[in-house]
Image 1 (spheres, rainbow over the protein chains, first blue to last red):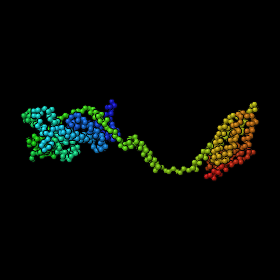
Image 2: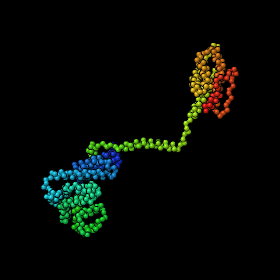
Image 3: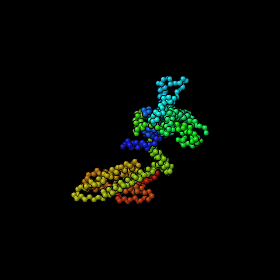
Image 4: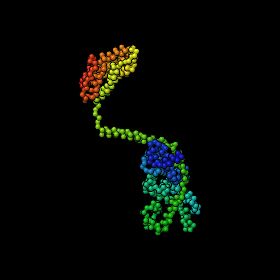
Length: 214
Length: 281
């Protein structure tokens, strides 16, 4: 009963008040912010990481970093938006680090003769299952997950923020630490890669549509 | 219109979801061009496929779990230096203090300044209190002396007179008398001090006498009272005190001496006290 009352009370405390109380030394006030925004940050983290384990680590790290930088927040924006951005930044750093580690483990044959980075989408295309295999929605989901993994961290961050969370180009540019034009191009590039990766499935659907099967 | 680039189609899809009105030409073209419409459908299929990706529900208590995981790792935050200063309790105290200061300032601004403290007034008040108190004491003493001097004890045996009641009254008056005599001496009122000194001796005689005295001794005490003229002196001093307490009134006539044989007091009388008072003023 007391827990219920406590949760009701904490629900009435605005973010700005909770931030001020935390800055005043009331560490427990930060619990209100964590409990209020965790699920939203988790959705972003999961879409960025692609698995629950990494997503939970991203969420925890995001709130830890937010706590340490809380003085910089100073009520300049919505706390939820702010911690979301911190999570996105941490996720992109983590993805980049993971890419580097994966690249070290990969055999050198994956590099082209010029040493340039090989487009991962080419790999997807080569190993793509036939349209028949992609007919099921679960297979489509698997294909999409695979395609998302093949995106660069910046592309993945851009498409997640733009499509799923409806973020503005400026906000994406802030997270990517790039210009708005570059951020917009990153979104385009991510969509192109995903479209190419899903093309066999789309063609299958179109064929089925043409044959009156859908 | 030429066929749009893929980026334009992506932007079109993106803006259409945001209901932007800047794509009318492209909309017209898409109505006419099946090829571009197919390209747009491929893009839409991408976003539809993205939407089909589920995000597992972390659970109702996910926020609490996150807090449980991170709270031990959170460093203690040093409160801001002004956080304590503006704490609610302190604000109340500061507010109350400020209100008192403002009230004091306003009261000081709008109230008339008090007249300077005058020691002469204090002396007057003190003297008036003394006059009233001594007057009261002299009244009681006068009554005592009158009763004692006119007493006609009925000693049936003709041997002893019981004066215990007079003794108790004398003892009470004696205590007060000492106090007022000393005060009169401190104030420099010699006439008052002298009369009180004589009264004290009479009171001492009565207080120190045995409870039962012979008729002869009692008669001697009465004669002694008369011979000293103490009752007359007390009345003179009383009159002087009345004049002091009511200076506007005409000084009343001095009481007539009952016993013409009794001489006037050789000590400074009330008129001398008044002249001294005038000198002090």
